[in-house]
Image (tube, rainbow, N blue to C red; front, side, top):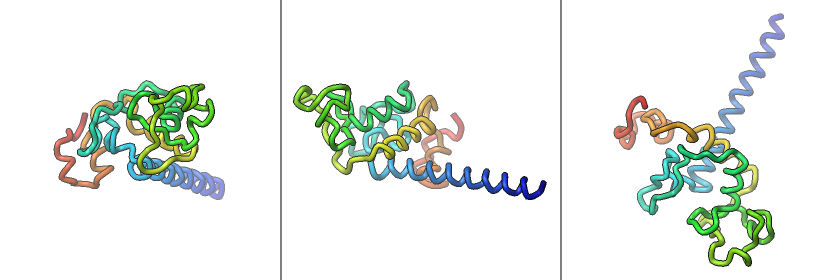
Length: 161
């Protein structure tokens, strides 16, 4: 019986560690590789970083499901500033059933930094759904999770929503 209990504890511990690694991976993709935070903000509230124009979608209010988020990340949004992270997005009809030739000037731009693989876009979508969607205003705890405990930038956020 002890062996079974120990085995269950090991499996649960490794599942928790794996979930934490997945979260950390997705967070790095959001903040660093895809630089989503440049426009959407570290808190996903659409405020963006200081140099951005702001006005990006507030991911805390999104009603998109996972598939819609992945499509938006990979294909961008025609006619808006949301870039497409799939390098070949409009070379065929995989995105919204249209090509670059059909969209013309409404074709979303490639991101300034890097493109993403589908699994990376899926990880970012999962991160958005877990950390932002339906969450309300950002809190000090969320800020400190991003910038570190006691970070000066986090003083402006309420300790509790």
